Length: 617
Image (tube, rainbow, N blue to C red; front, side, top):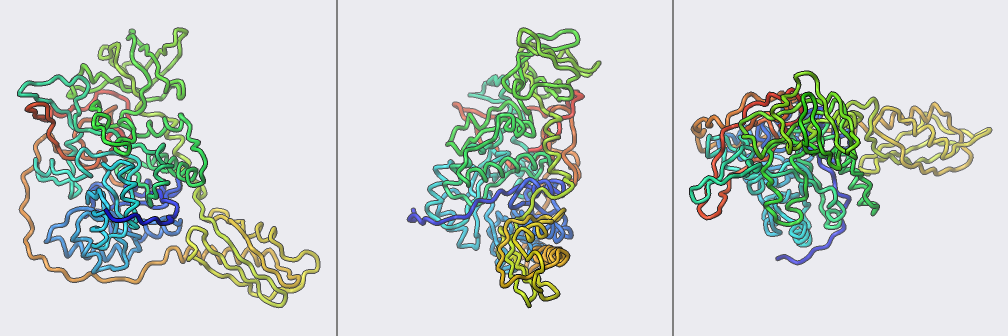
């Protein structure tokens, strides 16, 4: 093991996912330091992303707001695709991308030839789990490594102590049952490779378990390969102490509400931990994160290996918040024993509920669910729930069924300020140094606190004369320069150096402020010197087409990439390749001589309740 190399590190960045424009805008306003996204090709999330022609606009949008943009180029590339890959890499560099995220070592080498100044990040699919792995990636030109998600914080701490390379870890979102996202199941079954952005979601299917040739009852644990979702908010102080450079939120298939609420929560947690303040997140705010998307949240591998905790097996998709358990079913209402969550955020009209009968109902059967019409507490502590006429099949609900709130209008309300704000919520702090002298023009140097290399100078058109009444002062400058209105800047500090008793008109200061804003935005949106693709040779023909997938792993057309995932019934059928779980493999499950096989795919639910993002991973 290499020797320890301690180094002072900057504040870690929050990196948020963006499937398309709504998610990108939400990430910016919620406080992301960087955003990662894919294009239409060479990305592990093939059904969302931007076109190559949109990329310059994407980068201008991000840079004008002080946010970095990282392009996911994280698929394996065939030899016959190298010319197209080379052309795409040149276009990515020319658009001003801050880095590419790659899995393929050949692409890393190709990128170094085509765009030597374009930073390269090693994807988590490189499966780097040691300092030696980091060093190997560095030797190939990688400047940041996204560590495998199976590592504990103790493992990460050892790697951090042994390398100066930038390290990135996932802190929130979907996990993959295969090692570090390297799935080969759908490739083996039907030629759709997860390492080519075409994961068929085999990990989200129900399975049966054979032990020594005998079918073993699984009760509610039918989804043997479906992990819960990572949630590391409470580990943020320790992660910062370790010295991680970037904290990554999973979810390029998630909607803008998810991106906004999760980004905002981690932004707040990092700011507090960096300032050595205790965390202030409330239990109700944590419920919001569970409500916006959850299969069951936990730190999982970050606390060490515990596979039973990672895969509970009850659900393959969003279930939301557990609100209670059914105690009695009446002719037109349901009585439930509420959980603690119902005391923090009580059930109310408009909430979407799912009645979970996983222990007694086949995954092939639709679940029952609908929107609450009336929710009332009773004197005995139970709650009575009523629904619209014929909205619920009461005969399909039994005492003992779990009650999940899968959608909550209050969650959408909490996210709304980040989605379409009338003025920017995220503003970049600006500091100004002013020199004022009688008989000379006023000079103001403006610089961004977060990007000190971005600085501009504005000069008054006329020289300053002596003041008859009030000379130039810091309060006057703060008042005029601080009127930044709808532009994404805020005045952080003003320093004034004065010679004599000079006077300046407010109109002059206002014009200098407008000029400074225009110049700052121009600097932030500048593009690098264009590069040209290096000619490449394809020594091998295009590989033959694979056999089609079996019916269990086929999917209908994907949703438009500029919209949130479709509002489906309470829990739509699996497999759905529109979900955003990471790629997954099918490990053997051993207990004596054991084999697992997928059960029949679930049918569409007859529930009338639309659960937003229910299939998002």
